[in-house]
Image (cartoon, rainbow, N blue to C red; front, side, top):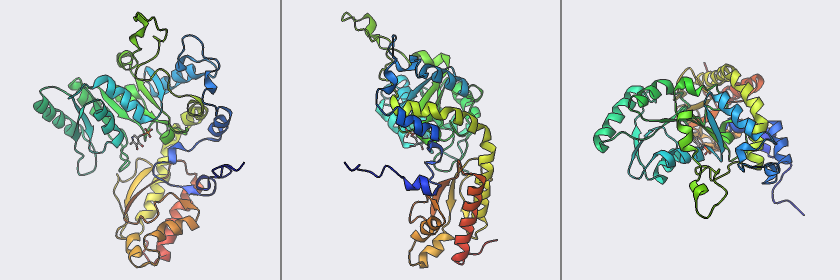
Length: 392
Ligand SMILES: Cc1ncc(COP(=O)(O)O)c(C=O)c1O
């Protein structure tokens, strides 16, 4: 029988250098791919599940140890794996936010954070970014004061994107957490663009929750992610069902409410585990990743009219670039219009720039080798020259 998809090749990954802004940190390691095949069955990790019947207690494969290792790695006290960062936001918001509560997010927050707040009945209040597209501790303090004035109470929770998805700017989580704590507001760090690609020390940052996305930044299959927290909050967010004392004498009292009992099974958790040794190693090389990102951004900036909208020099591999006065000028007259850029890159073995984008767009250089980074940098310059843009 013919398979409904071409399972032999996914050409984006097999044949091209992929600089798609959201895919870079989630690409599977070969070990994760092998594990995904071996553990493809949904309940494949449950063979050795014994009392107490919960996923994070399973010893074979060593899922229990994986939880301990993750907590230690992030310097937090407890971790649970969840189906995506968004499920982590949901678990925390559902625990801390009551209907009608104000909740702080930032103007750079991801939509999934807003949804988690709304689902819990909370009322989002945004902290504005400054002219450099940063969330500053002063802006946080000022917004907290506004919200206290408006609601006559402090918000029960604040969300901060460690690295925002719009600019790839790294925000000062440590200073911001300090401000939030002055008002006794627990702070959730959205590490979708940091956990698994750069070193994170949750205790040093002083945050209450660290959320990671497996498929975005931990070389894991989707949907996967994690919630890490401190001993202070673990009991509350990982509370178990009260059914133990119920007269119906149900036996599932160990199941955690926010985790819906058990969380990641099969491919997702095993893929995450298989990549973890690589992920733990790769975060140590963050400086090299940043250096390669800088090399490519500098090549783009050598093309007259190009501007970088993210922090410069770059401190992350995700970058927002403005080529309205360079590549977009070519698009105005090119027979392929804005599609010339993605086409010309594709001819050079590079994919991930949205076809048609020549105005303001993003790319992510995470995981490129030195040679690939050079190739991408040269490709941008070559495309510019071929299209008569001046290059310094
Ligand atoms: C900044 C940011 N936070 C959160 C998410 C949601 O992550 P997940 O897909 O793991 O739920 C994403 C991506 O979708 C993101 O870019």
